[in-house]
Length: 327
Image (cartoon, rainbow, N blue to C red):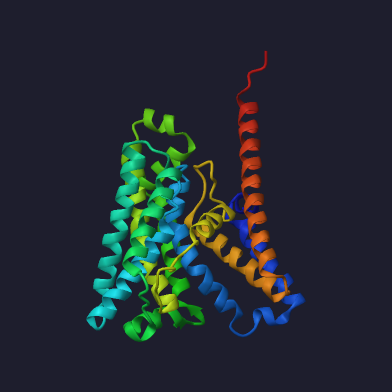
């Protein structure tokens, strides 16, 4: 039983998170008092929510860097609609988010799945396209809290038993997507594609259709993240969501989602997001400058990728030895 638990990739990440919290609390007890833990969960929520969707792509050896621009655009569109119409109902806000997010996801999915263009190149292009459209529409417009319905602030600042609503939403999404990946035919196909794309095609898995669907789903998740972004800050302008895409990828990798494909869960990505934010808050609590906070986060990402590569090489070497036939 213990050996089985140790093989779960998320366990070392969670242990590292607990150890970091304990160590920082010993050095600075104020770290775990007051609003500190809640603030960490709030900051990790948006990254974790987006990372849950990104997991579906990374396990297939793909990536989507346009999620930050998509979320930012939708946060502005919903906020601007509310500002110009004296409010916006929740169903309409969700409808805008799903429609725009799905449109971006469909474009990315079609280019990657059916034209077989590299996902990195495609999504960098759509990142700039969406951000350009965003900047054109937003201009100098700023949406403020008094122009939004009250439910946005309730989602962004409310909590249940001390756990922020934003984190509960992110956790629910991570759990649902993890179960879908593990227990549905569609999810197992994604793992198979990431493990060995040519073999997946040979056994009859519709690789292009699966890739397209995963990008479309990721677009919808990015769209819904726009509502979370607007709720988090109750504010939107042309800078909304700027630069968070790399943190999303970092959360996935740190949370055990293999860049080489075929391995990882959305729950692990969420834990990675929490660990990433905990490191930032811990370094701040210990008086480390913001520059070094970013440097440590970058070093952690490199270490996670290197560790994943070493594990993959050892697994390959072990499998090769098992199939060797003595002469």
